[in-house]
Image (cartoon, rainbow, N blue to C red; front, side, top):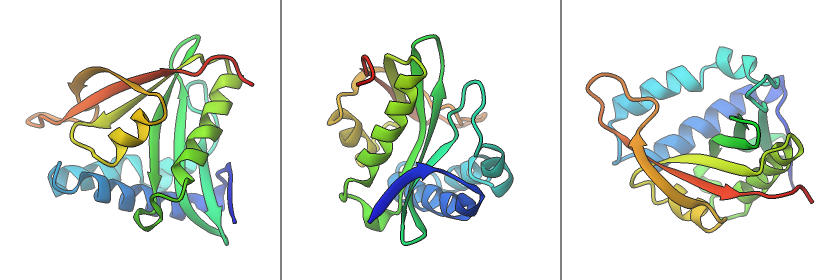
Amino acid sequence: MIHVKRAELEHVEGIQRVCCEGCRNAYRGLQEDAYIERNHRYWYNETRIKDELEESERWDGYYVAVENGEVVGAIGGGLTGEAESEVYVLYLDPARRGEGIGTMLLETLTHVQQLKGSRRQWVSVAKGNQKGIPFYESRGFQFVAEKPSFSNQEGDDYRSFRYAREIGEES
């Protein structure tokens, strides 16, 4: 049975694994391997994940989906304004796609963000990501704009789609 819970120190390695493997699976062929690996080193290194286990002003901490002690998915996000929030990261073990794990994680983070006052939730998805785009669209996110990807450095021209959805009152 899969349980979604706030991530703890024991989950750091699993968060690294699912984020890196999920990212490679989603972006291979859309982005250069060097770009993907550079992002892994920056966003999903052990020190950063340990530091981000706890909540901060604009970060809700990581939440994980765990089955038999193994992390099979991870999500993180935070408030970006008085009534707005962001899903910053959501990845699964690629072998576990289609089991409802992503939905469970998104529902958990959405609930956390609603309790903090968010009424609108945002997400960025890499242009061409045919694993992420249909997932978010089927959960009510609507396309708002195309922008340069947040992780671009000089010479990079990757694009992201910005999506948003109303998440209303917490029920």
